Image (cartoon, rainbow, N blue to C red; front, side, top):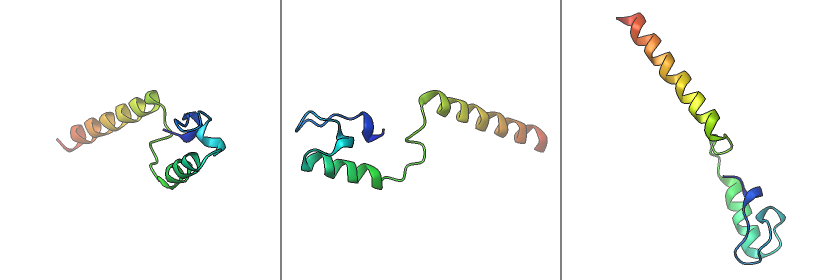
Amino acid sequence: MTYDRLVCANCAAPVSEGRCRVCRANRERLQQDNNYFAGLNPMALIALLAVLVAAMALLAHQTA
């Protein structure tokens, strides 16, 4: 999840604006996360999974 869609429970402002110390701390924590799949939408993840399954099936078929 990206911080641009989060709303702070402390100040009720978007976390991306960093109005309070809680927003700024959470924004820093989320920016430090290096999860490459966090920015992908669910359909892109499903498509990536389908491609990986197809590649594995093709590889298994060629080696058999």
